[in-house]
Amino acid sequence: MNSPNTAIMQSIEQLNYRVTVGDVATKSGLDLNIVQKELLKLAEDTNGNLQVAETGDIAYLFPKNFRSILNNKYWQLRGQKALEKTWKIVFYLIRISFGILLVSSILLMLIAIVVIVIAINSKGNDDNDNNSSRGGGGGGFFFFPRFWFSPDIFWIFTPDYQQRRYQRQLSNSAENELNFLESIYSFLFGDGNPNSNLEDKRWRSITTVIENNNGAIIAEQLAPYLDNINNYSEGDEGYILPVLTRFNGYPEVSEEGEIIYYFPELQVKAQEREKVSVSPYLKENLWTFSLATSSQKMLAVGLGAVNIVLALVLGSLLTSDIAEEIGGFILFIEFLYPLLLTYAVSYLGIPLIRYFWLQNRNNKVKERNYYREEKANLLESSKELELKINYAQNFANQTIISQDNLAYSTEKDLLDQQLEQKNKIDDEWRKRMEN
Figure 1 (cartoon, rainbow, N blue to C red):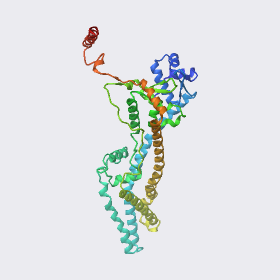
Figure 2: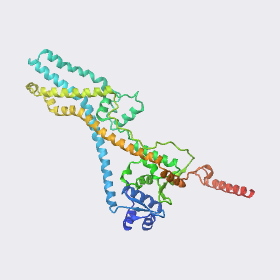
Figure 3: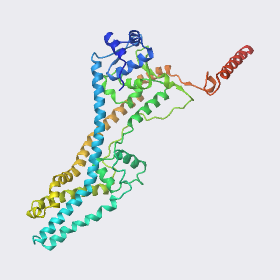
Figure 4: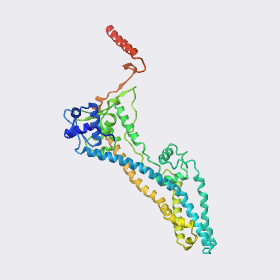
């Protein structure tokens, strides 16, 4: 968030927080265009309001604590960015730790169990059948190398792996089925944000709507693509301020007191363009629990169950006297046991918590989609809005910069262009005289 102009803020305070563009320009001595843009941006950042007079003139009303609102917003944005960076690093470390523990915990527990069982058997505390059944667990060693040595083993630990995996999976699901280790990550942590490009999609849709209407629209035409509408009361069109700020738009008032918005800079084109189809409203994708196949999810759950069983078996064996007698490696495992048990529980606990969290998140996504769709349907069915849109077209104007209306170009010498311009004017006068 850029710092607002100090002179403009001082002018607003001196003018008792209710100003026009002319008021602030006169008080501050700044250019009218600069004042117009700064007031729009300041109104957006401080939840200011637009007031329309019967004459069609517009005043800006700011809260008296707008400086405090700006400071709070500034620190909130800084804190949010710092938190996002910190969480990205923390989550990266958590993901790596789970990847390492995935293999090492099972191997360590199996080895420890085998060592303790062999020690018990050597003392005659267990029969041969029990020994063979316990020892048979070692077959699990042959389960992992085939999956561990994957082409993705080097980039799977990168911080942006999750989002890259999601995009790659969507690009071609047939060729990019998750391997074993990827399916475990998907089961534990999901596959990235399905709406990571939502803001790009939002602004592309908004500019398409503006261009399709030749640079002049009403607020209701953009409502199906915005999320900040609920922050404003009914009839308050302050939610369109971010659009005006982003694309240098200007409000204009009809004789009936209705506001339309036009964007002069978006009305200028290098060549004529046809209307482009655009979705009637911005639709968010639902969050998926995992892109892993059903069999891979079952395998991941089974692995979690094995982890817990091994941890419980190991815990019972560590309480025996023989474990203390062995010492060395077993004492090291005993020291690590709380971590191994925590991992075994977390392995199934994290996906379970994430599942219910995603249900709540998807409900909010559905609610936003439904609200936007309602706005789009209202736009199609309301005769009143249709008349308002028709009025907005009075300000629709598309300027095409073609070769015929060029006054100057850097690709040619200035004197040559002046001569061509003079000849063009002479030709026009000659044609008029002949007619």
